[in-house]
Length: 132
Image 1 (cartoon, rainbow, N blue to C red):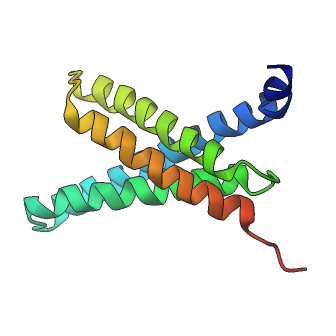
Image 2 (image 1 turned 90 degrees about the horizontal axis):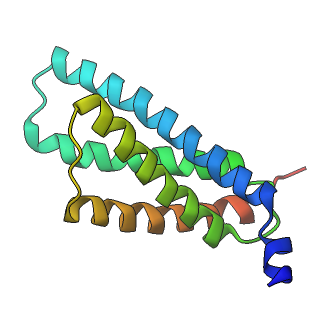
């Protein structure tokens, strides 16, 4: 057990928290911009859900990339946790803003989706080689 605690130490946890907070911040900005765009144009309602998914992917990608690129390994695990924590934080923030908490299958599917996307982005971030 000591080996696991040493390898999965507080710098990794700090990167997970930092990546999730960055992802939530990016989501807030992009959703605000999208809301303004909706208000100014006639974007159909059917476009809202796909755009929200793209915003989630972009947010998780940048959260993972900015915080995990210096890690030597564990991109899948740390990226997955970034995606999972991002979803929980985003759910709490947007539920508070909306004034309603709704635990349902949509939330579960969002957690699964974000965990998978986070894992993929974490792998990409950790394996990114910087050209000298």
